[in-house]
Amino acid sequence: MTIGIHVPILAIAVPLLGAFALPIFAKVHRNLRDLWAILVAAFTCAMVVALAVQVFTSGIQLYTLGAASPTATVVQGGFPIRIVLVVDGMSAFMGLITALVGLASLMYAFQFLKEEQGKTLAMTLFFLLWAGMLGMESTGDMFNFFVFLEVTSIAACALVGYRTWESRPPEAAFKTMAMYTVGGLLVLLAVGILYGEYGALNIAYLSSQISGTPLDKVALGLLLGGLLMKAGTVPAHMWAPDAYGEAPAQAAIVLVANTQASLYGLFRVLFTLYGGALSTPAVGWLVTALGTLTLLVAALMAVIQTDLGGLIAYGAVSQIGYMLLGGGVGLTVISSRPDFGLVAMKGGIFHMMNDAATVGLLFLAAGVVKRACGTKDLRALGGLGHDLKWTSGFFFLGALALAGIPPLNGFASKFLIYESSFRLSPILTAIAVLGSILLLAVFVRAFQGAFLGPRLRTVQPAPLGMLIAMGVLAAIILAFGLVPDFFVRHMVTPAAEALWRGRDLYLAAVLGD
Amino acid sequence: MIGNFPFAVCMILIALGLWTLLTRRNLIKLAIGITLIESGVNLFLVTLGYVRGGVAPIYTYAPPGARMVLPTPQALTLTSIVIGLATTALMLAFAVVIYRHRGTLDAGKIRELRG
Image (cartoon, rainbow over all chains, first blue to last red):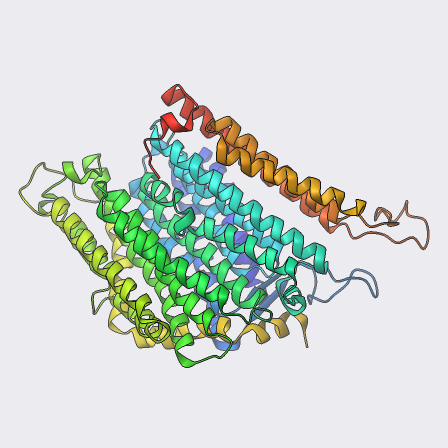
Protein backbone atom coordinates (compact mmCIF):
# COMPACT_ATOMS: atom_id res chain seq x y z
CA MET A 1 0.00 0.00 0.00
CA THR A 2 2.62 2.58 -0.89
CA ILE A 3 0.26 4.44 -3.20
CA GLY A 4 -2.33 4.66 -0.43
CA ILE A 5 -0.52 7.33 1.55
CA HIS A 6 0.14 9.45 -1.52
CA VAL A 7 -3.49 9.66 -2.59
CA PRO A 8 -4.05 13.33 -1.57
CA ILE A 9 -1.19 14.69 -3.67
CA LEU A 10 -1.87 12.34 -6.58
CA ALA A 11 -5.41 13.72 -6.85
CA ILE A 12 -3.86 17.14 -7.61
CA ALA A 13 -0.68 16.15 -9.42
CA VAL A 14 -2.25 13.77 -11.94
CA PRO A 15 -4.72 16.25 -13.51
CA LEU A 16 -1.94 18.87 -13.51
CA LEU A 17 0.35 16.51 -15.43
CA GLY A 18 -2.64 15.57 -17.57
CA ALA A 19 -3.18 19.21 -18.51
CA PHE A 20 0.37 19.92 -19.58
CA ALA A 21 0.92 16.61 -21.38
CA LEU A 22 -2.37 16.79 -23.28
CA PRO A 23 -1.21 19.19 -26.06
CA ILE A 24 1.87 17.03 -26.65
CA PHE A 25 -0.25 13.92 -27.13
CA ALA A 26 -2.61 15.92 -29.34
CA LYS A 27 0.36 16.71 -31.64
CA VAL A 28 0.90 12.97 -32.12
CA HIS A 29 -2.67 11.91 -32.70
CA ARG A 30 -6.18 12.92 -31.65
CA ASN A 31 -7.08 9.44 -30.48
CA LEU A 32 -3.98 9.33 -28.28
CA ARG A 33 -5.08 12.64 -26.75
CA ASP A 34 -8.56 11.31 -26.04
CA LEU A 35 -7.17 8.13 -24.54
CA TRP A 36 -4.84 10.17 -22.33
CA ALA A 37 -7.72 12.41 -21.20
CA ILE A 38 -9.86 9.40 -20.30
CA LEU A 39 -6.98 7.74 -18.40
CA VAL A 40 -6.16 10.88 -16.44
CA ALA A 41 -9.81 11.57 -15.62
CA ALA A 42 -10.44 7.99 -14.53
CA PHE A 43 -7.33 7.95 -12.35
CA THR A 44 -8.16 11.31 -10.77
CA CYS A 45 -11.71 10.25 -9.98
CA ALA A 46 -10.42 6.98 -8.50
CA MET A 47 -8.01 8.94 -6.29
CA VAL A 48 -10.72 11.35 -5.12
CA VAL A 49 -13.14 8.53 -4.33
CA ALA A 50 -10.43 6.55 -2.52
CA LEU A 51 -9.55 9.65 -0.53
CA ALA A 52 -13.20 10.24 0.38
CA VAL A 53 -13.59 6.64 1.50
CA GLN A 54 -10.48 6.94 3.67
CA VAL A 55 -11.73 10.20 5.20
CA PHE A 56 -15.27 8.98 5.85
CA THR A 57 -14.07 5.74 7.44
CA SER A 58 -10.92 6.73 9.32
CA GLY A 59 -10.98 10.50 9.79
CA ILE A 60 -8.78 13.37 8.63
CA GLN A 61 -6.06 12.52 6.12
CA LEU A 62 -2.84 14.46 6.42
CA TYR A 63 -0.14 14.60 3.77
CA THR A 64 3.13 16.46 4.24
CA LEU A 65 5.14 17.29 1.15
CA GLY A 66 8.79 16.40 1.47
CA ALA A 67 8.73 15.13 5.06
CA ALA A 68 7.16 12.49 7.25
CA SER A 69 5.26 14.87 9.51
CA PRO A 70 4.26 18.55 9.38
CA THR A 71 6.46 19.37 12.37
CA ALA A 72 9.67 17.99 10.84
CA THR A 73 12.47 20.56 10.57
CA VAL A 74 15.44 20.89 8.25
CA VAL A 75 18.00 21.39 10.98
CA GLN A 76 17.78 20.33 14.59
CA GLY A 77 15.64 22.81 16.54
CA GLY A 78 14.77 24.76 13.40
CA PHE A 79 11.47 26.23 12.35
CA PRO A 80 9.05 23.80 10.68
CA ILE A 81 7.98 25.04 7.26
CA ARG A 82 6.07 22.42 5.38
CA ILE A 83 3.42 22.41 2.73
CA VAL A 84 0.65 20.22 4.06
CA LEU A 85 -2.52 18.86 2.54
CA VAL A 86 -5.30 18.34 5.07
CA VAL A 87 -8.37 16.49 3.88
CA ASP A 88 -11.27 16.38 6.32
CA GLY A 89 -14.93 15.50 5.71
CA MET A 90 -15.72 18.84 4.07
CA SER A 91 -12.72 18.70 1.74
CA ALA A 92 -13.53 15.14 0.75
CA PHE A 93 -17.15 16.06 0.04
CA MET A 94 -16.08 19.01 -2.12
CA GLY A 95 -13.61 16.73 -3.88
CA LEU A 96 -16.46 14.37 -4.77
CA ILE A 97 -18.50 17.25 -6.21
CA THR A 98 -15.53 18.43 -8.25
CA ALA A 99 -14.80 14.93 -9.53
CA LEU A 100 -18.43 14.37 -10.52
CA VAL A 101 -18.73 17.67 -12.36
CA GLY A 102 -15.38 17.16 -14.05
CA LEU A 103 -16.36 13.71 -15.25
CA ALA A 104 -19.69 14.90 -16.65
CA SER A 105 -18.00 17.87 -18.32
CA LEU A 106 -15.36 15.73 -19.99
CA MET A 107 -17.85 13.11 -21.23
CA TYR A 108 -19.94 15.91 -22.71
CA ALA A 109 -16.93 17.71 -24.19
CA PHE A 110 -15.82 14.81 -26.42
CA GLN A 111 -18.76 15.23 -28.75
CA PHE A 112 -19.73 18.82 -27.96
CA LEU A 113 -16.47 20.54 -28.90
CA LYS A 114 -15.35 20.78 -32.50
CA GLU A 115 -11.75 20.02 -33.46
CA GLU A 116 -11.32 23.23 -35.44
CA GLN A 117 -12.66 25.30 -32.55
CA GLY A 118 -9.86 24.64 -30.08
CA LYS A 119 -10.88 21.30 -28.62
CA THR A 120 -7.36 20.47 -27.41
CA LEU A 121 -7.02 23.90 -25.82
CA ALA A 122 -10.36 23.65 -24.02
CA MET A 123 -9.51 20.20 -22.68
CA THR A 124 -6.10 21.39 -21.46
CA LEU A 125 -7.67 24.34 -19.64
CA PHE A 126 -10.31 22.05 -18.18
CA PHE A 127 -7.70 19.77 -16.60
CA LEU A 128 -5.81 22.79 -15.26
CA LEU A 129 -9.02 24.12 -13.69
CA TRP A 130 -9.80 20.69 -12.27
CA ALA A 131 -6.36 20.41 -10.65
CA GLY A 132 -6.69 23.92 -9.23
CA MET A 133 -10.08 23.20 -7.68
CA LEU A 134 -8.92 19.93 -6.11
CA GLY A 135 -5.88 21.79 -4.77
CA MET A 136 -8.00 24.55 -3.24
CA GLU A 137 -10.13 21.95 -1.53
CA SER A 138 -7.35 19.92 0.03
CA THR A 139 -4.61 22.38 0.91
CA GLY A 140 -3.86 23.13 4.55
CA ASP A 141 -1.89 26.28 3.86
CA MET A 142 -3.17 29.79 3.20
CA PHE A 143 -0.59 30.70 0.56
CA ASN A 144 -1.13 27.49 -1.37
CA PHE A 145 -4.80 28.24 -1.22
CA PHE A 146 -4.10 31.58 -2.92
CA VAL A 147 -1.94 29.92 -5.57
CA PHE A 148 -4.60 27.34 -6.43
CA LEU A 149 -7.22 30.10 -6.38
CA GLU A 150 -5.24 31.96 -9.03
CA VAL A 151 -4.71 28.76 -11.04
CA THR A 152 -8.47 28.31 -11.19
CA SER A 153 -8.96 32.02 -12.00
CA ILE A 154 -6.61 31.95 -14.97
CA ALA A 155 -7.90 28.63 -16.30
CA ALA A 156 -11.55 29.61 -15.80
CA CYS A 157 -11.20 32.98 -17.55
CA ALA A 158 -9.33 31.43 -20.43
CA LEU A 159 -12.13 28.86 -20.74
CA VAL A 160 -14.74 31.62 -20.79
CA GLY A 161 -12.95 33.67 -23.44
CA TYR A 162 -10.98 31.27 -25.63
CA ARG A 163 -13.51 31.51 -28.47
CA THR A 164 -11.94 34.70 -29.78
CA TRP A 165 -13.75 34.56 -33.12
CA GLU A 166 -16.92 35.68 -31.33
CA SER A 167 -17.08 39.15 -29.83
CA ARG A 168 -18.87 38.54 -26.54
CA PRO A 169 -16.86 35.75 -24.84
CA PRO A 170 -13.64 37.84 -24.57
CA GLU A 171 -15.63 40.71 -23.02
CA ALA A 172 -17.18 38.42 -20.43
CA ALA A 173 -13.73 36.94 -19.81
CA PHE A 174 -12.13 40.37 -19.30
CA LYS A 175 -14.76 41.36 -16.78
CA THR A 176 -14.42 38.02 -14.96
CA MET A 177 -10.64 38.24 -14.98
CA ALA A 178 -10.72 41.72 -13.41
CA MET A 179 -13.05 40.57 -10.63
CA TYR A 180 -11.14 37.33 -10.02
CA THR A 181 -7.77 39.08 -9.89
CA VAL A 182 -8.89 41.80 -7.48
CA GLY A 183 -10.54 39.13 -5.31
CA GLY A 184 -7.38 37.04 -5.39
CA LEU A 185 -5.22 40.04 -4.47
CA LEU A 186 -7.46 40.85 -1.49
CA VAL A 187 -6.95 37.27 -0.33
CA LEU A 188 -3.18 37.61 -0.81
CA LEU A 189 -3.14 40.86 1.19
CA ALA A 190 -4.99 39.09 4.01
CA VAL A 191 -2.52 36.20 3.85
CA GLY A 192 0.32 38.74 4.08
CA ILE A 193 -1.26 40.40 7.13
CA LEU A 194 -1.69 37.05 8.87
CA TYR A 195 1.89 36.09 8.03
CA GLY A 196 3.19 39.40 9.36
CA GLU A 197 1.30 38.89 12.58
CA TYR A 198 2.02 35.24 13.32
CA GLY A 199 4.91 34.28 11.04
CA ALA A 200 3.17 31.24 9.61
CA LEU A 201 0.89 30.27 6.76
CA ASN A 202 -0.42 26.95 8.02
CA ILE A 203 -4.20 27.15 8.54
CA ALA A 204 -4.18 25.00 11.67
CA TYR A 205 -1.31 26.92 13.31
CA LEU A 206 -2.83 30.30 12.39
CA SER A 207 -6.18 29.15 13.75
CA SER A 208 -4.60 28.26 17.07
CA GLN A 209 -3.00 31.72 17.29
CA ILE A 210 -5.71 34.06 16.02
CA SER A 211 -7.20 35.91 18.94
CA GLY A 212 -9.36 38.57 17.29
CA THR A 213 -7.00 41.56 17.21
CA PRO A 214 -7.96 44.50 14.95
CA LEU A 215 -5.51 43.24 12.31
CA ASP A 216 -7.19 39.81 12.40
CA LYS A 217 -10.49 41.50 11.72
CA VAL A 218 -9.03 43.44 8.78
CA ALA A 219 -7.68 40.17 7.39
CA LEU A 220 -11.06 38.50 7.87
CA GLY A 221 -12.76 41.36 6.04
CA LEU A 222 -10.31 41.07 3.14
CA LEU A 223 -10.71 37.29 2.95
CA LEU A 224 -14.50 37.59 3.04
CA GLY A 225 -14.46 40.27 0.36
CA GLY A 226 -12.07 38.41 -1.91
CA LEU A 227 -13.77 35.05 -1.67
CA LEU A 228 -17.29 36.47 -2.02
CA MET A 229 -16.14 38.28 -5.16
CA LYS A 230 -14.93 35.00 -6.56
CA ALA A 231 -18.08 33.15 -5.47
CA GLY A 232 -20.28 35.69 -7.29
CA THR A 233 -22.55 36.82 -4.46
CA VAL A 234 -24.68 39.86 -4.84
CA PRO A 235 -22.64 43.02 -4.43
CA ALA A 236 -20.01 41.47 -6.72
CA HIS A 237 -22.12 39.19 -8.90
CA MET A 238 -21.85 41.14 -12.17
CA TRP A 239 -19.31 38.83 -13.74
CA ALA A 240 -21.09 35.58 -13.00
CA PRO A 241 -24.09 35.69 -15.38
CA ASP A 242 -21.90 36.89 -18.27
CA ALA A 243 -19.26 34.26 -17.65
CA TYR A 244 -21.77 31.42 -17.28
CA GLY A 245 -23.82 32.65 -20.21
CA GLU A 246 -20.90 33.08 -22.62
CA ALA A 247 -18.83 30.05 -21.62
CA PRO A 248 -19.42 26.90 -23.68
CA ALA A 249 -21.69 24.45 -21.82
CA GLN A 250 -18.99 22.00 -20.78
CA ALA A 251 -17.00 24.88 -19.23
CA ALA A 252 -20.01 26.54 -17.57
CA ILE A 253 -20.67 23.56 -15.33
CA VAL A 254 -17.02 23.50 -14.21
CA LEU A 255 -17.30 27.23 -13.47
CA VAL A 256 -20.20 26.41 -11.14
CA ALA A 257 -18.01 23.90 -9.32
CA ASN A 258 -15.25 26.53 -9.19
CA THR A 259 -17.65 28.97 -7.54
CA GLN A 260 -18.41 26.33 -4.97
CA ALA A 261 -14.70 25.79 -4.35
CA SER A 262 -14.46 29.51 -3.45
CA LEU A 263 -17.44 29.04 -1.17
CA TYR A 264 -15.62 26.12 0.41
CA GLY A 265 -12.68 28.45 1.01
CA LEU A 266 -15.03 30.93 2.65
CA PHE A 267 -16.47 28.28 4.97
CA ARG A 268 -12.97 27.02 5.76
CA VAL A 269 -11.89 30.53 6.71
CA LEU A 270 -14.99 31.25 8.77
CA PHE A 271 -15.31 27.94 10.60
CA THR A 272 -11.75 26.63 10.85
CA LEU A 273 -9.35 29.57 10.53
CA TYR A 274 -11.46 32.01 12.58
CA GLY A 275 -13.46 29.36 14.42
CA GLY A 276 -11.73 30.04 17.72
CA ALA A 277 -11.86 33.83 17.73
CA LEU A 278 -15.27 34.41 16.22
CA SER A 279 -17.77 34.35 19.02
CA THR A 280 -19.91 37.25 17.85
CA PRO A 281 -22.83 36.31 15.60
CA ALA A 282 -22.37 39.54 13.62
CA VAL A 283 -20.32 37.85 10.88
CA GLY A 284 -22.88 35.06 10.69
CA TRP A 285 -25.66 37.58 10.22
CA LEU A 286 -23.63 39.32 7.51
CA VAL A 287 -23.20 36.05 5.60
CA THR A 288 -26.88 35.17 6.11
CA ALA A 289 -27.99 38.59 4.86
CA LEU A 290 -25.73 38.37 1.80
CA GLY A 291 -27.04 34.90 1.05
CA THR A 292 -30.66 35.99 1.29
CA LEU A 293 -29.99 39.06 -0.82
CA THR A 294 -28.16 36.99 -3.44
CA LEU A 295 -30.91 34.43 -3.84
CA LEU A 296 -33.63 37.07 -4.09
CA VAL A 297 -31.85 39.50 -6.44
CA ALA A 298 -30.66 36.71 -8.74
CA ALA A 299 -34.14 35.13 -8.89
CA LEU A 300 -35.64 38.54 -9.75
CA MET A 301 -33.02 39.12 -12.44
CA ALA A 302 -33.74 35.69 -13.90
CA VAL A 303 -37.33 36.80 -14.56
CA ILE A 304 -36.29 39.42 -17.14
CA GLN A 305 -33.78 37.28 -19.06
CA THR A 306 -34.56 36.45 -22.67
CA ASP A 307 -31.48 34.29 -23.23
CA LEU A 308 -31.54 30.68 -22.07
CA GLY A 309 -27.88 30.87 -20.97
CA GLY A 310 -28.40 34.07 -18.98
CA LEU A 311 -31.51 32.64 -17.37
CA ILE A 312 -29.73 29.51 -16.13
CA ALA A 313 -26.78 31.69 -15.08
CA TYR A 314 -28.97 33.78 -12.77
CA GLY A 315 -30.52 30.55 -11.48
CA ALA A 316 -26.99 29.35 -10.66
CA VAL A 317 -26.17 32.60 -8.83
CA SER A 318 -29.35 32.33 -6.77
CA GLN A 319 -28.38 28.81 -5.67
CA ILE A 320 -25.12 30.22 -4.26
CA GLY A 321 -27.40 32.36 -2.08
CA TYR A 322 -29.04 29.24 -0.61
CA MET A 323 -25.65 27.75 0.28
CA LEU A 324 -24.54 30.99 1.93
CA LEU A 325 -27.84 31.13 3.80
CA GLY A 326 -27.29 27.62 5.18
CA GLY A 327 -23.70 28.36 6.19
CA GLY A 328 -24.61 31.78 7.58
CA VAL A 329 -27.39 30.43 9.79
CA GLY A 330 -24.96 27.83 11.13
CA LEU A 331 -22.30 30.48 11.76
CA THR A 332 -24.73 32.82 13.51
CA VAL A 333 -25.65 30.28 16.16
CA ILE A 334 -22.34 28.41 16.38
CA SER A 335 -21.44 29.88 19.76
CA SER A 336 -24.46 28.34 21.51
CA ARG A 337 -24.55 25.25 19.22
CA PRO A 338 -28.28 24.50 19.01
CA ASP A 339 -29.37 21.57 16.85
CA PHE A 340 -30.80 23.63 14.03
CA GLY A 341 -27.40 25.20 13.33
CA LEU A 342 -26.06 21.83 12.29
CA VAL A 343 -29.21 21.19 10.24
CA ALA A 344 -28.63 24.48 8.42
CA MET A 345 -25.03 23.53 7.72
CA LYS A 346 -26.14 20.16 6.37
CA GLY A 347 -28.69 21.89 4.15
CA GLY A 348 -26.14 24.36 2.80
CA ILE A 349 -23.52 21.71 2.15
CA PHE A 350 -25.97 19.19 0.68
CA HIS A 351 -27.21 21.96 -1.59
CA MET A 352 -23.70 22.34 -3.04
CA MET A 353 -23.83 18.79 -4.39
CA ASN A 354 -27.42 19.22 -5.58
CA ASP A 355 -26.64 22.54 -7.23
CA ALA A 356 -23.68 21.04 -9.08
CA ALA A 357 -25.92 18.28 -10.49
CA THR A 358 -28.98 20.45 -11.19
CA VAL A 359 -27.42 23.57 -12.65
CA GLY A 360 -24.91 21.36 -14.45
CA LEU A 361 -27.74 19.43 -16.11
CA LEU A 362 -29.47 22.67 -17.16
CA PHE A 363 -26.27 24.11 -18.65
CA LEU A 364 -25.61 20.89 -20.56
CA ALA A 365 -29.18 20.85 -21.90
CA ALA A 366 -28.80 24.51 -22.96
CA GLY A 367 -25.56 23.50 -24.70
CA VAL A 368 -27.48 20.93 -26.75
CA VAL A 369 -29.98 23.65 -27.73
CA LYS A 370 -27.17 26.00 -28.74
CA ARG A 371 -25.47 23.25 -30.75
CA ALA A 372 -28.71 22.33 -32.52
CA CYS A 373 -30.06 25.81 -33.24
CA GLY A 374 -27.01 28.09 -33.10
CA THR A 375 -28.76 30.42 -30.64
CA LYS A 376 -29.94 30.45 -27.06
CA ASP A 377 -32.37 33.35 -27.51
CA LEU A 378 -35.71 32.25 -26.09
CA ARG A 379 -37.62 34.49 -28.52
CA ALA A 380 -36.22 32.53 -31.48
CA LEU A 381 -36.67 29.06 -30.00
CA GLY A 382 -39.71 26.84 -29.89
CA GLY A 383 -40.97 23.31 -30.38
CA LEU A 384 -37.59 21.69 -29.80
CA GLY A 385 -39.27 18.91 -27.78
CA HIS A 386 -40.32 17.21 -31.03
CA ASP A 387 -36.73 16.40 -31.96
CA LEU A 388 -34.79 16.72 -28.69
CA LYS A 389 -36.89 14.36 -26.61
CA TRP A 390 -34.25 13.30 -24.09
CA THR A 391 -32.84 16.80 -23.77
CA SER A 392 -36.23 18.35 -23.05
CA GLY A 393 -36.86 15.67 -20.42
CA PHE A 394 -33.51 16.42 -18.78
CA PHE A 395 -34.14 20.17 -18.89
CA PHE A 396 -37.56 19.73 -17.28
CA LEU A 397 -36.07 17.51 -14.55
CA GLY A 398 -33.32 20.05 -13.89
CA ALA A 399 -35.79 22.95 -13.78
CA LEU A 400 -38.02 21.18 -11.26
CA ALA A 401 -35.04 20.18 -9.12
CA LEU A 402 -33.67 23.74 -9.19
CA ALA A 403 -37.00 25.10 -7.98
CA GLY A 404 -37.06 22.57 -5.16
CA ILE A 405 -40.04 20.40 -6.12
CA PRO A 406 -40.36 17.12 -4.16
CA PRO A 407 -39.25 14.37 -4.59
CA LEU A 408 -36.15 15.76 -6.33
CA ASN A 409 -32.83 16.56 -4.69
CA GLY A 410 -33.31 20.34 -4.64
CA PHE A 411 -36.25 19.85 -2.30
CA ALA A 412 -34.27 17.63 0.07
CA SER A 413 -31.57 20.23 0.69
CA LYS A 414 -33.78 23.31 0.51
CA PHE A 415 -36.13 21.80 3.06
CA LEU A 416 -33.24 21.47 5.53
CA ILE A 417 -32.39 25.14 4.92
CA TYR A 418 -36.03 26.27 5.26
CA GLU A 419 -36.69 24.44 8.50
CA SER A 420 -33.48 25.63 10.16
CA SER A 421 -33.55 29.25 8.95
CA PHE A 422 -37.15 29.43 10.21
CA ARG A 423 -35.83 28.84 13.71
CA LEU A 424 -33.50 31.81 13.33
CA SER A 425 -35.92 34.16 11.61
CA PRO A 426 -39.11 33.37 9.63
CA ILE A 427 -38.37 36.27 7.28
CA LEU A 428 -35.33 34.42 5.89
CA THR A 429 -37.47 31.39 5.13
CA ALA A 430 -40.14 33.51 3.49
CA ILE A 431 -37.57 35.12 1.16
CA ALA A 432 -35.97 31.75 0.40
CA VAL A 433 -39.35 30.21 -0.53
CA LEU A 434 -40.20 33.28 -2.62
CA GLY A 435 -36.92 32.85 -4.52
CA SER A 436 -37.77 29.23 -5.26
CA ILE A 437 -41.26 30.11 -6.50
CA LEU A 438 -39.84 32.79 -8.80
CA LEU A 439 -37.34 30.30 -10.21
CA LEU A 440 -40.06 27.74 -10.78
CA ALA A 441 -42.14 30.27 -12.72
CA VAL A 442 -39.14 31.40 -14.78
CA PHE A 443 -37.99 27.91 -15.67
CA VAL A 444 -41.43 26.57 -16.51
CA ARG A 445 -41.89 29.54 -18.85
CA ALA A 446 -38.48 28.91 -20.42
CA PHE A 447 -39.25 25.21 -20.84
CA GLN A 448 -42.57 25.99 -22.42
CA GLY A 449 -41.03 28.60 -24.73
CA ALA A 450 -38.07 26.54 -25.92
CA PHE A 451 -39.30 22.96 -26.00
CA LEU A 452 -43.09 22.99 -26.34
CA GLY A 453 -45.32 24.37 -29.06
CA PRO A 454 -45.33 23.75 -32.82
CA ARG A 455 -42.15 22.57 -34.50
CA LEU A 456 -40.32 25.61 -35.90
CA ARG A 457 -37.40 23.76 -37.46
CA THR A 458 -35.99 20.26 -37.70
CA VAL A 459 -32.89 19.79 -35.58
CA GLN A 460 -30.39 17.00 -35.08
CA PRO A 461 -30.82 15.17 -31.76
CA ALA A 462 -27.90 15.17 -29.30
CA PRO A 463 -25.19 12.54 -29.78
CA LEU A 464 -25.00 9.63 -27.35
CA GLY A 465 -21.95 10.83 -25.39
CA MET A 466 -23.65 14.10 -24.47
CA LEU A 467 -26.82 12.26 -23.49
CA ILE A 468 -24.83 9.93 -21.21
CA ALA A 469 -23.18 12.92 -19.51
CA MET A 470 -26.60 14.45 -18.87
CA GLY A 471 -27.95 11.06 -17.81
CA VAL A 472 -25.29 10.76 -15.10
CA LEU A 473 -26.32 14.10 -13.62
CA ALA A 474 -30.02 13.23 -13.93
CA ALA A 475 -29.39 9.95 -12.11
CA ILE A 476 -27.71 11.89 -9.28
CA ILE A 477 -30.71 14.23 -9.08
CA LEU A 478 -33.13 11.31 -8.81
CA ALA A 479 -30.99 9.26 -6.42
CA PHE A 480 -30.40 12.17 -4.05
CA GLY A 481 -34.05 13.13 -4.22
CA LEU A 482 -35.48 9.67 -3.56
CA VAL A 483 -33.17 8.53 -0.75
CA PRO A 484 -31.76 11.75 0.71
CA ASP A 485 -31.40 10.23 4.20
CA PHE A 486 -28.77 7.77 3.02
CA PHE A 487 -26.58 10.44 1.44
CA VAL A 488 -27.12 12.92 4.26
CA ARG A 489 -26.05 10.36 6.84
CA HIS A 490 -22.98 9.02 5.04
CA MET A 491 -21.64 12.02 3.15
CA VAL A 492 -23.20 15.31 4.20
CA THR A 493 -23.16 14.82 7.98
CA PRO A 494 -19.40 14.13 8.15
CA ALA A 495 -18.82 17.22 6.00
CA ALA A 496 -21.06 19.44 8.13
CA GLU A 497 -19.60 18.05 11.36
CA ALA A 498 -16.10 18.80 10.06
CA LEU A 499 -16.98 22.50 10.03
CA TRP A 500 -19.41 22.52 12.95
CA ARG A 501 -17.32 20.70 15.54
CA GLY A 502 -14.29 19.49 13.64
CA ARG A 503 -11.97 22.47 14.21
CA ASP A 504 -10.31 20.85 17.22
CA LEU A 505 -9.79 17.61 15.30
CA TYR A 506 -8.34 19.57 12.37
CA LEU A 507 -5.91 21.40 14.62
CA ALA A 508 -4.94 18.25 16.47
CA ALA A 509 -4.33 16.37 13.22
CA VAL A 510 -1.87 19.00 11.95
CA LEU A 511 -0.24 20.30 15.12
CA GLY A 512 0.00 16.83 16.57
CA ASP A 513 -1.11 17.12 20.15
CA MET B 1 6.91 55.67 13.38
CA ILE B 2 9.22 55.85 10.37
CA GLY B 3 9.28 52.03 10.43
CA ASN B 4 5.66 51.97 9.32
CA PHE B 5 6.36 54.19 6.32
CA PRO B 6 6.77 51.28 3.83
CA PHE B 7 3.40 49.86 4.87
CA ALA B 8 1.76 53.23 4.25
CA VAL B 9 3.32 53.34 0.77
CA CYS B 10 1.93 49.86 -0.01
CA MET B 11 -1.55 50.85 1.10
CA ILE B 12 -1.39 54.07 -0.97
CA LEU B 13 -0.42 52.00 -4.03
CA ILE B 14 -3.31 49.61 -3.45
CA ALA B 15 -5.74 52.48 -2.93
CA LEU B 16 -4.53 54.13 -6.16
CA GLY B 17 -5.11 50.86 -8.00
CA LEU B 18 -8.64 50.54 -6.64
CA TRP B 19 -9.31 54.19 -7.54
CA THR B 20 -8.16 53.50 -11.10
CA LEU B 21 -10.48 50.49 -11.35
CA LEU B 22 -13.47 52.48 -10.15
CA THR B 23 -12.99 55.64 -12.20
CA ARG B 24 -11.41 54.61 -15.53
CA ARG B 25 -13.25 53.08 -18.47
CA ASN B 26 -10.30 52.20 -20.71
CA LEU B 27 -9.52 48.48 -20.66
CA ILE B 28 -5.75 49.03 -20.71
CA LYS B 29 -6.06 51.44 -17.77
CA LEU B 30 -8.10 48.86 -15.89
CA ALA B 31 -5.28 46.38 -16.43
CA ILE B 32 -2.82 49.02 -15.16
CA GLY B 33 -4.99 49.53 -12.08
CA ILE B 34 -4.89 45.82 -11.31
CA THR B 35 -1.12 45.80 -11.80
CA LEU B 36 -0.87 48.69 -9.31
CA ILE B 37 -2.80 46.73 -6.67
CA GLU B 38 -0.59 43.75 -7.39
CA SER B 39 2.60 45.80 -6.95
CA GLY B 40 1.25 47.19 -3.69
CA VAL B 41 0.56 43.70 -2.35
CA ASN B 42 3.95 42.38 -3.52
CA LEU B 43 5.71 45.33 -1.91
CA PHE B 44 3.78 44.60 1.28
CA LEU B 45 5.00 40.99 1.27
CA VAL B 46 8.61 42.08 0.70
CA THR B 47 8.33 44.62 3.51
CA LEU B 48 7.15 41.88 5.86
CA GLY B 49 10.33 39.97 5.17
CA TYR B 50 12.62 42.71 6.49
CA VAL B 51 14.09 41.96 9.89
CA ARG B 52 16.33 44.55 11.56
CA GLY B 53 19.82 43.09 11.93
CA GLY B 54 18.98 39.92 10.00
CA VAL B 55 21.13 38.62 7.16
CA ALA B 56 20.16 36.86 3.95
CA PRO B 57 19.75 33.12 4.55
CA ILE B 58 22.70 31.98 2.42
CA TYR B 59 24.71 29.56 4.54
CA THR B 60 28.02 30.07 2.75
CA TYR B 61 27.94 33.88 3.02
CA ALA B 62 26.40 34.42 6.44
CA PRO B 63 28.89 35.23 9.21
CA PRO B 64 28.88 32.65 12.01
CA GLY B 65 26.28 33.30 14.67
CA ALA B 66 24.36 35.85 12.59
CA ARG B 67 20.56 35.88 12.66
CA MET B 68 19.30 34.67 9.31
CA VAL B 69 15.86 35.80 8.17
CA LEU B 70 13.21 33.33 7.09
CA PRO B 71 12.99 33.59 3.31
CA THR B 72 9.27 32.75 3.12
CA PRO B 73 8.01 36.26 2.17
CA GLN B 74 10.52 36.46 -0.68
CA ALA B 75 9.36 33.08 -1.94
CA LEU B 76 5.75 34.22 -1.71
CA THR B 77 6.54 37.41 -3.62
CA LEU B 78 8.28 35.53 -6.43
CA THR B 79 5.30 33.20 -6.80
CA SER B 80 2.92 36.11 -6.70
CA ILE B 81 4.88 38.01 -9.37
CA VAL B 82 4.72 35.00 -11.69
CA ILE B 83 0.97 34.65 -11.14
CA GLY B 84 0.58 38.39 -11.71
CA LEU B 85 2.42 38.12 -15.01
CA ALA B 86 0.04 35.41 -16.17
CA THR B 87 -3.09 37.33 -15.20
CA THR B 88 -1.84 40.59 -16.76
CA ALA B 89 -0.88 38.83 -19.98
CA LEU B 90 -4.26 37.15 -20.19
CA MET B 91 -6.13 40.41 -19.55
CA LEU B 92 -4.14 42.31 -22.15
CA ALA B 93 -4.71 39.49 -24.63
CA PHE B 94 -8.44 39.78 -24.07
CA ALA B 95 -8.17 43.57 -24.50
CA VAL B 96 -6.48 43.04 -27.90
CA VAL B 97 -9.21 40.63 -29.01
CA ILE B 98 -11.94 43.02 -27.86
CA TYR B 99 -10.29 45.88 -29.75
CA ARG B 100 -10.19 43.81 -32.94
CA HIS B 101 -13.90 43.07 -32.69
CA ARG B 102 -15.16 46.47 -31.58
CA GLY B 103 -12.51 48.95 -32.66
CA THR B 104 -12.51 50.66 -29.26
CA LEU B 105 -11.16 50.07 -25.76
CA ASP B 106 -13.80 52.13 -23.96
CA ALA B 107 -15.59 49.81 -21.55
CA GLY B 108 -18.65 52.08 -21.56
CA LYS B 109 -19.12 51.74 -25.34
CA ILE B 110 -18.39 48.09 -25.89
CA ARG B 111 -20.34 46.53 -23.07
CA GLU B 112 -23.43 45.10 -24.55
CA LEU B 113 -23.06 42.76 -21.60
CA ARG B 114 -24.88 44.76 -18.99
CA GLY B 115 -24.43 44.64 -15.22
